[in-house]
Amino acid sequence: MIPAEGGLENVIPSTGYPHWRSPAQPGSKNSNGILHGRTAIAGRIAAPVRLIRLWRQRARDRALLARFDGRTLRDIGLSPADVMREINRPFWRE
Image (cartoon, rainbow, N blue to C red; front, top):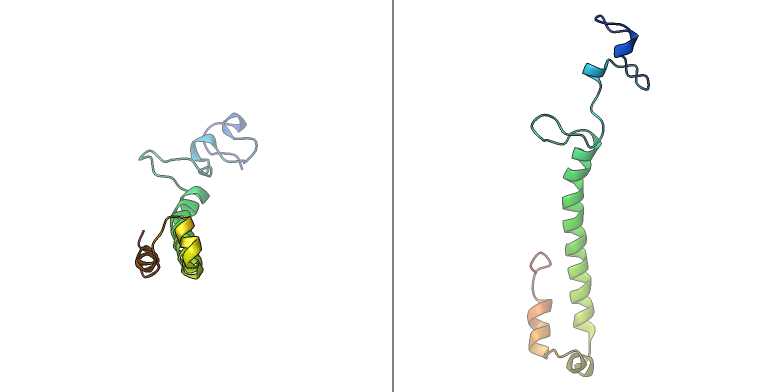
């Protein structure tokens, strides 16, 4: 592809695009500082995925805590009331 203005010196060799119209590189920002390309999509997906992983971990931890016997609870410094309060919390609450 040869641009209408200028010659081949204005073409980015690896892409064939004129340097003034080259496509956005992944992870680059536009003039407003907004990410675009694959990085923006990954950023929009990463936060909910992290949140879901956190929620699942809390649910697993609370299920495990519910299986501890009295001796184990004393060893880790928790009372049965502490355990009941913790395991009855919804997974989305810290």
